[in-house]
Length: 403
Ligand code: FES
Ligand SMILES: [Fe+2]
Image (tube, rainbow, N blue to C red; front, side):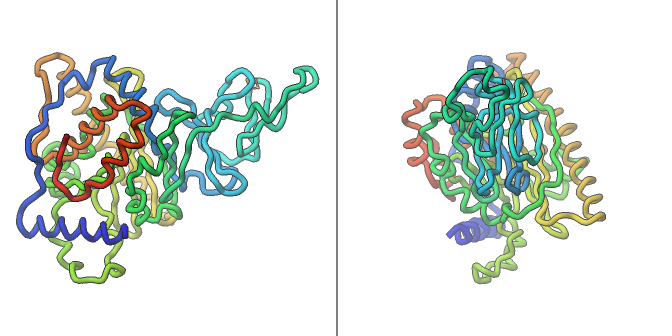
């Protein structure tokens, strides 16, 4: 079913290429400039988006084996993700049940147990408290009542989502809106995690707008990769998540093939965004690779941090490693020196108050859809979240119809 949808997307992109058209929104979109710097709004976005909807916090490739773990801070919350002995993935607050110390330092590793650095309380991979140091002195305590605090977590399509709200009533599956079935086409479960690196940027929405925007490619990136890329895009939505792929005449070579004969690359090309903070850009050449960009709000409304993860379909040999390192450095340069350098100056200009709003054109449907979802979440009560995602499930294909 998902392959049929991907082929339908490709055929739609081909039809647009042959007709010389793109999907357009009905109207322009005005987004208030204050949305990018107002501290109250920013806090609301953290509380009602980052702390309510599932976030893609890890890839299967980062923790493939039992005992593998990843500790990170997401939107100010310390999180510990563990591959348990049975091979499942679980997520917890990275926080000790004794006096709340962070148990594991930020990073990856493999272990049999998690031992707190403060007084050595020890937990197993499933988060159960297994040992209390100097137990007799400490006093009798029912260990079974003092496990790590679990967070909702789901591993799908080689990607791992965690909700930063232990009592969330929004099933991660509902949030994914069927998009995970399409992402499964990449086969990330068996991919190799090559490297990760961090880039500092402007307000998280200024940064994220850029990932859905092909319009700027030949202009802002004229000295790097821009001239080789088309700057026209179609947007396909599954709930808030969007696939960005341009009209591409090269797809004509596949159009009469049976579904099973379509090459993966033709079906997964372009940019895949996962609301509210992920962009996956795919590349080809001697096996596929992707850069998965993971955005988090920074410490102030005008800052963000992006972790770039480079994943490869196969473990690279020496020559491929060299090539991948060069490409990954290049990608960091482009994002840091072109996208985010521009974004940081844009941030300053917006904060000057010189314009009351920014504009998104009829060709920038990705921005329309994204800001629409940000606004929807800011006005939706916790109890209504599952219904919100159910209602807006698949708008796949339709040109933007915003309510
Ligand atoms: S805070 Fe973890 S053992 Fe004391
Ligand atoms: Fe860019």
